[in-house]
Image 1 (cartoon, rainbow, N blue to C red):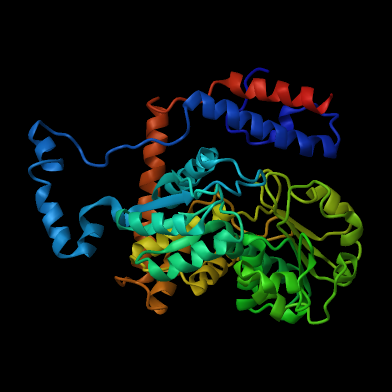
Image 2 (tube, rainbow, N blue to C red):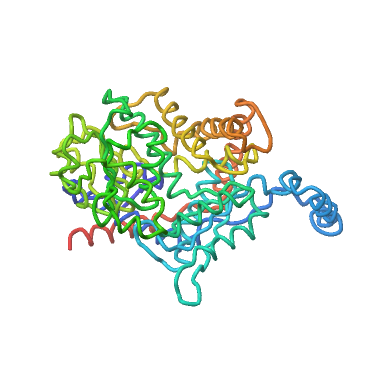
Length: 485
């Protein structure tokens, strides 16, 4: 394989031209996983710590450390908020996980989540100009069970070193308690990106998809397939943004949610799910096929496919149906199969298919906006503001059924989103400092450009080496062998 394209612009070009659509879809998944393993092993991960201040001579060590730095400590002692001015706290996020629900792979043990958490920090830096540090913790108690209170205590203890905390990959029901307690008891924003972040970006995609099919949010019938941390939050945020919960049916692994679900009602740990039982599905529909009849939208965040969502279900939907199949790493149904069944717009959580609805479009801008005004929390209204911001940005540059929302390679979207979130934080009364929209946008844009320019400069000067073509070649060869077995 000669002259291989290191940008991986078109993955289909890497594989035999006679691969079927099904083979090609499977090949992309296998290839990306294999290349990820190869590349992470080659680089020993993807994050490092780099100073942002210079060393111009010996005495600068005495400025950055002792004795000079004691002045910084005593000033912060007198006013803790000065820590945002005198340290990197104002632009630093802790990415905290117990690794109990990593992507679609379940409990991966505490260190098993490091690759994902480093990835989160990587995207924060490149897309949002925000520094992040991966903190994968062991929250198991003496009985070997993951204890939400241990995670709550950990975050509360370390919050003073960070400007915000991004919770990630925490299994339910623990995720509900961890987020709700920390949002109220911490003095910095605590954000569960799998839940609120996915909800925000999904809402953005839904807003523009409904524009394209000329349907109103308050009138559409929606089926939510899956009721974990992500989809239960998607449903809650969609209801807050105007979707009529009485026109919604939500399914978990045991069936449809409704007031008949006593198993949910009796388990107090699932209080968020019980709230959804009380407001949705007043007809107490129990069957997925019945729920799908005449549905305008299917939002699936359940378990990896590719045949978790059936083509026969999509055929039951209303005219110009919208299908979001967002499980990672494999969607519940591949886009080509959904289109064959009649779907008008199809979105997934992956960037190698059209219409990526993934929290990567949300958290860099949302966290940046919260950090800019030193917010004390991220409200639901801030998440909705981010969704509207993403939708508006995409609509201004043009949308179509295969391009409903902004993508990660549209650099301008994250500063735009950050500024809108910063404005909402001020309106909600959770900001420590105030600024205009333009001031927020300019600061976010400058920080993002600085981060990108630094990474590109390090690459051009070979402090960050380009990946050897052999990594890609081996991944392709491995993938073809797996497909042709």
